Each structure stands twice: as C-alpha cells, then as structure tokens.
Image (cartoon, rainbow, N blue to C red; front, side):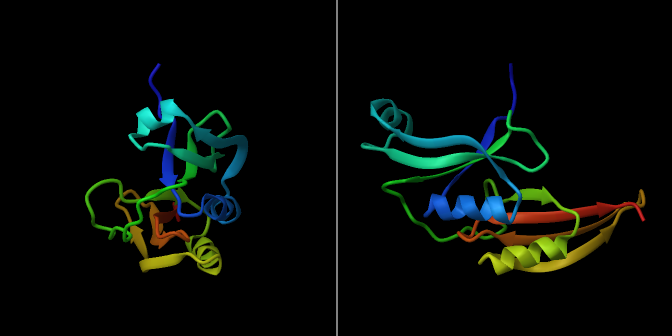
Length: 150
C-alpha cells in the first residue's frame, strides 16, 4: 500500500488552533486525540522527554479514513518567526471554497490574517477562479480558491 495520510502542524496552542480549523475551515473531529510520550517518542523525534497533545481532523471533502490534518503541541517547543510566502519548503495548505471573500472574512473575524489581495483569473479553457492567501491564528499560510465555468 502507498497513500497520503496526513499533514502536521505544530501549534503554539493546539486546542485553540484545532478550534480555528474546525469552526472556520470546516475540518471535523474524528475522535483521534493525541496524548503521547515515552521512550519510543523520544527516539522518533530526537527530543528527550517529548510529550505531545493534539488531534487529527478530517479535512473538508473527505471522510474519516484520511487524509487528515494533525495538529499538536509539544510541551517544549522551538518558536521561530513565521516564514514568508516565498520561502523554500512547504509553503501553504489550499482549500477550495464556494466563496473566497466569505471564508476570508471568517478567517479575519476569527483572528487570522491576509496576505496580498483577492485576485481573479480566467483560464483559456473558460474556467474562472478567485484566489487569496490568508493565515491562520498562528501565522500558517492558507490558500483559498474558488472555481467556476461561467
């Protein structure tokens, strides 16, 4: 077997970030809460005395069988400045939504942020799209996109 399973976000406050993704971006709890520690976790992470808490959330449009968004916090974490949109490595998660502006407003009302402007593009095949980059409440970058064939 070979399949994609999950994406992980290390949160400063996992409970608060989990609530944000559930309420604003329609992720759902699948009852897979994490409270992990032990010698095996220390060996896996390379962090002595590692302890993590968090939860797996079902991504919108999928069932509880995966893929999920895994959000957790370590008791001891390295805090760094948020990465700019053009940094090397994984840059953002994208969500297809019915209305980019409405979901962006929900993100902003919940304490998230916006990067750049809402833009519209028309493709040669007649598809039209709206895009915007936003941030969750901890600065992780989210792309919102909506598509139509008008």
